[in-house]
Image 1 (cartoon, helix red, strand yellow):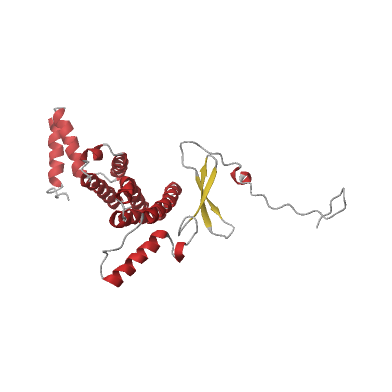
Image 2 (spheres, helix red, strand yellow):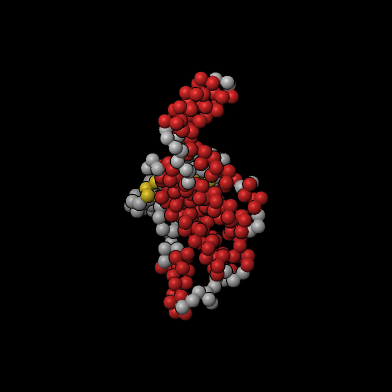
Length: 270
């Protein structure tokens, strides 16, 4: 132990500082963007940090984002799903299983943690984690919608379903794009658009589909994917033929018709 030079008595070591300023130095908060990074924790495992205006959030890469294990389960959702399975085994039915307002509130708080993480994972390009966490939050919506005691708890999360469906589709489609499966990626996006349409129609709000920001994002994503698809030679020739006829370039139009004929009969589209 060091000695105090003025008194000669042993100097007590300073306790480690809990000030997070050194962690934030060189990482300025940028308004309007999602500021995230991957770091290695003191346990040697990767973590995600999200920069906020007054600090940061740190999340585990898997399991519950805060690392907790409520009731020994991976998450509160897993715990309640296990209780539901036990209820089915015991009674042979789901009837009688329910979630109290406090339980639903805790599930919503937990879902917010997963929202922060899947948003961060999307920015980091960790799309398998995005798919995992969005699918998990959809399970929360389904559980509360079916078993909450109060109507408010059954419906309050439903407003976020289109957003979660969108993010789940973007994650799954992005995985396919990385593998070069453009048509599969496009199919995933189209299915999500149809799913959101069905959601709004189920609530008697078909007009909301036309104004949905989630649908707008997915339609733009679909256009971007289509632009990367190899051109259909028949469609391209038909486009050129239409332009040639409109411009009265009849010799060129005749040549283009011959080329289309040589391609054989058009295959029906799915």
